[in-house]
Every structure is written in structure tokens, then in C-alpha cells.
Length: 137
Image (cartoon, rainbow, N blue to C red; front, side):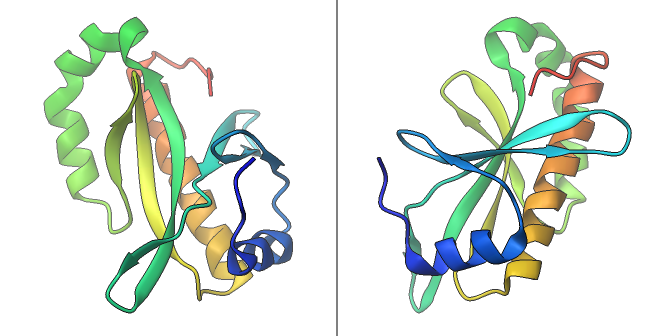
């Protein structure tokens, strides 16, 4: 079980997001009004760059083994889309394409929730486009 930074715990508890602790991540599911849902993962490890500390928030988009061909076909569009976003970027974790953003350990619970929601909304939009509407995550 990972050790959770007390600042992250404060953000999570204050945000109202429901989550569970897994072996490496804190995992939750955000539901949308259109009936879709999106998994989010939070790395409890604190990243530091100078005086800035943050946590990674990730949301899976597609399994690359299953959707490799579509990802290759859509690669330019994916990169173009990601380049227009003000928050986050795409990344690969294992065989999964994810949308990822950093969130400061010092932000309010409301700002934290906003980052999680934005990451999930963007990941869901990309998942829907890449998987022809599937809601696997």
C-alpha cells in the first residue's frame, strides 16, 4: 500500500471524490451526465522540481494492444489535439495510452477536483474517438 502525502489526503477528502487505494495508485471513477464514466488514477508519490511539488493524475484512454492500429491512424490528430490543451499531455503507461496532468500539492480541494474532472473529460473524449465510442475505462 502506498503512503499518501497528508496534503494529497486533504485535497482528496475535501474534493468529495470517491477513491480506493490500490497497490500503486489511488483509483476512482468519475461519472458523467451522458451515462459514460472515466477511471482516474492518482500517483501518491510527490514529484518535486525546485520548490514546486505535485502529484500525477492519469486517466486511461485506450489499450494500445487492442487499438494500436487506430492509434497509429489517428496519431497526428491525437498530437494536434493534445497540443491545443492548456492542461496535461498524453503518455504511455505499460500498454495503455493515458491522459496525464500534474496537480500542485498546495492547491485547494476544489482546484484539485477541477483538474481531475478535466483530465477525465479529455481522456473520455479521446477514448470515445479512438475506440469508436467504447467506454472501457
